[in-house]
Length: 193
Image 1: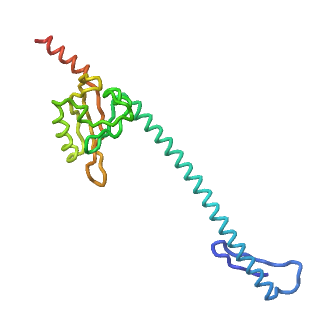
Image 2 (image 1 turned 90 degrees about the vertical axis):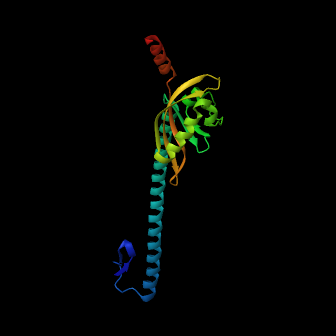
Image 3 (image 1 turned 45 degrees about the vertical axis):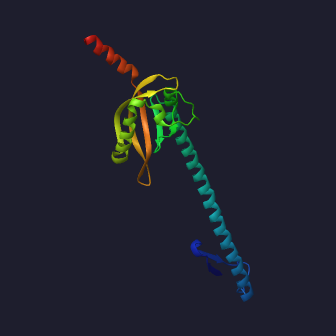
């Protein structure tokens, strides 16, 4: 019999039960070539098997990512409060349905936050940008906004900074319409006088 080392596959033992003589040098060389080709084929099968496994795993991960994105998008679009992302220049990067309805813009319409904030409250936006850059968040900032139909709404904003490479690059803003609450407070105040 003959024993061939096959690397990581172990050993291959070849024997002939129907012959009495030993293998000739030519037969040994031919068998060695066959064993090398067999080893190469096994290695190729393993590579192919790994590729198939990796492809399946990648598809699973991709599907999970798509599901996660879909859930996030659904949450973002359908939350009750308005969500607005703004860049350093105040350009609205993204907004959910509640924000677009509150402000009165379409999903494709680009606007600057300065165009939305009431002129008397624009200084609050500049001050809050400085705080966002240094502290990273703002809680319960109240200001007035102008809607597309020129109505004035009172809003309360909670913001956190968007960072790119460790630098302030804009903000994510949760905007709650508190107009009815402020109107009710004003009526109570006037009735108490």
